[in-house]
Image: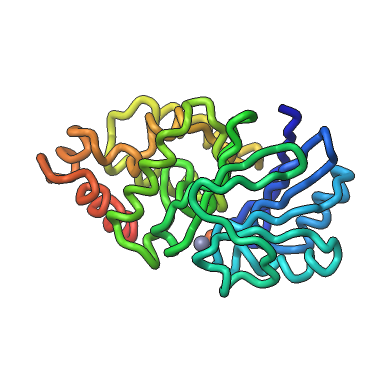
Length: 255
Ligand code: ZN
Ligand code: FE
């Protein structure tokens, strides 16, 4: 599949991502944290903005929409459940809907928890997942509008994606997430390996995103709450997975 991605920093620790269909020239911004760096990225790549695919309504994912819409007249797609809170929205989507970016087909996966209507976009052919603030590398989003059970179900849906899926998330939080994850799973070799890799990227000033689903399944404690070892580690043997998840999320909130 002729898909190209381009990732770049926005605001303090957000990422902007462009998804480009080389066949048709169509280009989507995944969220719009900040118009100026998105414009600069478009210019650098020589791409024309046709679409904005929004994951959720938070300002650090939507505040660039208005300027980009005015300049490019691009289509704005976002979650039906949050349509009222997303400026200039043209098209609303829900679970299972497809969104075309040129010839590239993205499928919508509803992943509520961080916000009540949060969605992720999955492109099966180039194996790209855009997960906003639901899943981070070695972490997950804060549960703000939903509850822990809801967030755990959302993470389970993302965990179904293949190991070689590339995962683009909304923020560069990886190093801090690893510091926390280490308090939960001290002996995890996959986590140790990711930690070394991430330290090297950060030293070089490079992003730790995208990650892969395979790495996250092996090293991200928030995707591992249904393993007996994790329940054991937080002192909740035999507890339901979502309760173990809630405990880990709660500890991270106060870390
Ligand atoms: Zn958010
Ligand atoms: Fe965010």
